[in-house]
Image (cartoon, rainbow, N blue to C red; front, side, top):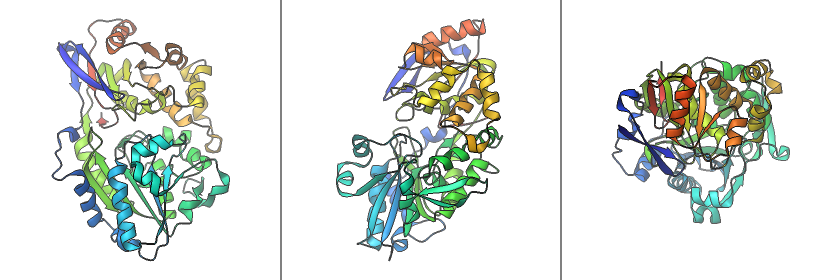
Length: 425
């Protein structure tokens, strides 16, 4: 028997499985990468050697109104490391700069004060001006023109009116934008709901290039990059993190060029070859990315690439916040079949995109390929309402997979962190 431990919320969940069932354990080599410097030096050195731009302190000279876009509570960005260094550099260039930290919530719920303190520390929350983006606050949104796709680019007014717009973030594989980080701080980070929903429309989500690890010819990425440049995002600091969410690599500078350097590093570490199996176990890497079922779809897409058609995906995500979106939950609860739901999505024009449609569409795509068994803290009826199979534990899930597949000798692939790998067929 092989003993495996998987991230589950802020803890680990372990289980035993027969060694001969396992075809592979797909992991990123990031876990083996040892940074040569401490986390502060990694970020500081990247900022001292920016890619494609001048240093931040030089960009900040004579810039009185500065907006620093920061990630929200759903992202494990080590803001306690990055933001103080960015603030220091800005004030070195202009000690009197009026700085606003704008929280890039996208379409997420508002970040609480406790979450801000956990993210930045008490001193920054107490001393700095922090504004939480609201995608529905029309009085504080500005129309910036149309995106290449035809969608209306509507941006947070603070970002639009800044003399200098900068951002922090992290880069990881992303299940439809290719990679997170860089341009995503602007779109979806600080845009209007209308803009985000157009960018996440059914046609784009269905596009074969809107997949993990793909930027070239990805229509979602193209709009995001255009928006970041149109907003004059002048300087980014992006990190790549380890399992403890500490920086192991950092890039700084131009939104496209610096991000590309981070992507290049990540591609070398995160590509794994698919091991096609009847059953695939995946996770969302634990807290904070497994706080709800909505986010857990990301880890499912890693399993989607390596599960056999008609197989089972066992998704291990604590989901202590439940489903993560009322519309997302209701969409599956109200549908007669996942197939009919997918047909409905594909017939929906971009301007008619509804809240969380993209996540529902991707989950439906996954479920049309394989049965999803969810191991979480969610109530059984919630899981079943969403057309998934409820399991109390990984052992219970494996037993249910055996029944669904109607065989004892199924093959198994394990992905300990589904959001950290790029699975290639």
